[in-house]
Image (cartoon, rainbow, N blue to C red):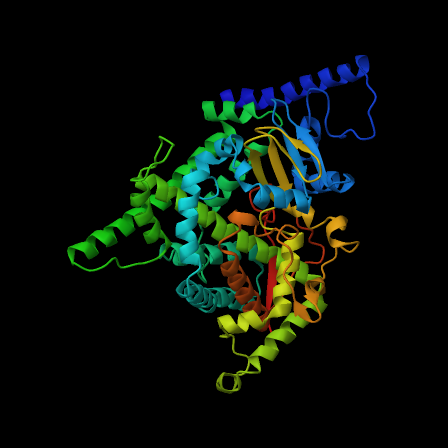
Length: 527
């Protein structure tokens, strides 16, 4: 009953505020200067445009940034939150690199995400972030990890992904490709980072409550950012109502998953110690277990030092979020874009066949039309056109479309904008890929060729192409993600043709990652 009254109250409050605003305009009209930000309304700031455009948030922000001469605009919300949205590469480099120490994950961001992400690497600052970054960077930079990723991804492709697609092909049924890819990447990250195999991608495609729960937790957590009146979600959380009750339930189940992993690993370690042998594993989870013990003995200003299990829980959730959703989201958008660009698909297949033609012995030994094709790390590096096509898709459809920082002290951005202490800087990675000032008049076109100079692939400035973030917090899993995505695309395109309904127009979920809302169904045909 309380939830019913709260749901009734919210539109009433919005209506009353709207009436107040109209009266203010009628009786206290004012002239707008040409330079004034059109989204900043008296008292309410960005509230009404945000409510109106919440369902198309990233495109709305893109339109506003495109209309600004510096690709930056100031905003504030009811409640006093102030800051900027920007898609200016110079501003981004200043915030993420040049003046890195002045821009942190602010109190607002920490508070909103703490229930789900805790103090994991994506939500941490200071010593805790540095420690997590140090441990993770060591692991991600080792040659053994690179080889393990290749082996893990190829194994998952050949033993699970290919059979799933073959089954759909043989039975003549359509499948939700995004769902399949989420299962695939979930298995990958659990095997690589935690030494555990949940086997969620299986030809029988069992129901996956945990995968759905992760999706619910991320979407409901992100939705807190989009409240026109931020205090409302806090009221719902305090009363355990509506979306906040669903979020609490989802987080509880995510916690159970993480704690089961931790308990199983501790049991393994204890058993190996009884036998007098070394730890049976050397993966990311094991390294973080050792680091957690060491970190708690060091001097840290924060009095809320994490107990090991809570710290490890946060680490697991953060890495699952990064490893599961970003790659699967990127691959889904890639295959959708490819479905309307047959020329690019043909060019990618030609490149793959050229590389495979070098394997004379292997190709002669393989039955004609065989599906069990895997690729080495060196072969994947040779696929420059595929690499460019993936980058071009990431430019237009970045898996993480928005980033946010908060100023520790007053500052001036390169475009001359004043930033007050505690103000937020929200940078739209989605908008940056659509800025004519950055990419030219053809910025909305899908053109892998834009990544080539004199026939060679050339990486872009990370402050222009920031799909993997930039500066000291640049994505540690960038190389791993490219290995995973290129392996998946090459294996699928070599063996299958994916059909997407030409009338299908995808929309994105309003979430941490830009998942397709409702997924994407495809039909599968063998080549």
